[in-house]
Image 1 (tube, rainbow over the protein chains, first blue to last red):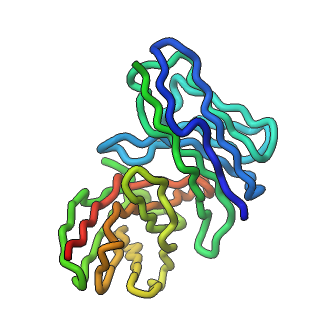
Image 2: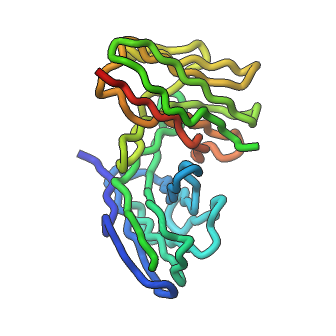
Length: 114
Length: 111
C-alpha cells in the first residue's frame, strides 16, 4: 500500500544546530508539503513543491529550506535551530480527488529545540 | 482576520447526540472544501470533501454556503470514537493544490 513516512519521529536538538527532517512518499504524487502545528495556530504551511526541482515558500518559511531531487522525497532543513521552531512537523503529499486536491499526511515529527 | 475560522470548542456531547460545527472562510474565490479529522497527537486525515450541493457519508453531513462563505459539518448519533478535533480546510483559487487549515474544533463525546 502507498504511504508517506517521516523520520525521525522525535528529535531533541540544541539551539544553533542544523537539523534535517525526512519525508518519503510512495504515492507517486508530484505535490508535497511541509507544515508545522502549534497550539492555537493550527497547521501552517512552511514550504511546498509541485515537482522535482520545484520549491516554494509558504507562510512561515523563514529559517527553513527544502530541496526536491526526486519525486518521493522532500527533506526539510532547519538551518540554525531556534527555540521558536519547537513544534510538531507534518509532511503531506497530494493527489487529485473528486472535489479537489486531497492531502495525505505523514505521522509527524515532534521536534524540541533546547 | 484568519482565512479560515472555526469555534475551537470544546463541544462536550453525550453519546447519541447530534452536533454541528460551522466554519467561515474569507476568500470568496475558494475552490474546494474539506473536513479533516485529527486525533490527539496524530496526523490529520481526510474525513470528507464538501460538494456545492451538500453531501452525506453515513452519520456525517457536510454543507457549503458560498453566498455566506461558510461550511458546516453535522454528526448524527455521536459515538465515543467521534471524539477528535475537526479541521475545516479550504483550497484557495490561486494555488490549486494548496490547502488552508482552520485551527480546528474539538469534540468530546461522553458516555
